[in-house]
Image (cartoon, rainbow, N blue to C red):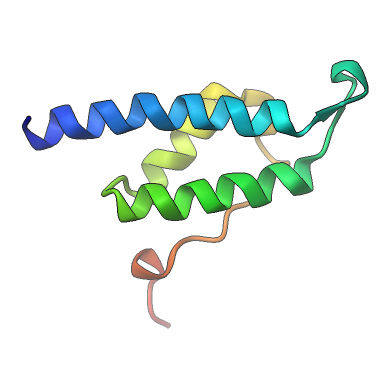
Length: 86
């Protein structure tokens, strides 16, 4: 499998993982979303995705295209290899 095929495969997997994280943060019959917990879950997923070769910017784009309601409510901690030195 070439690199682009590999990245497409992990993108699909992470989209499923994003949905699962969101579902785990829904309470009171879908009326309340725990965005703090969602941020924690998605940040962990982002770190794993970065280790798999998926850049954080791509992961963020996937999150906000999958969960547009999370825009402005979820803030990521960028994994170390991608943090720019001051």
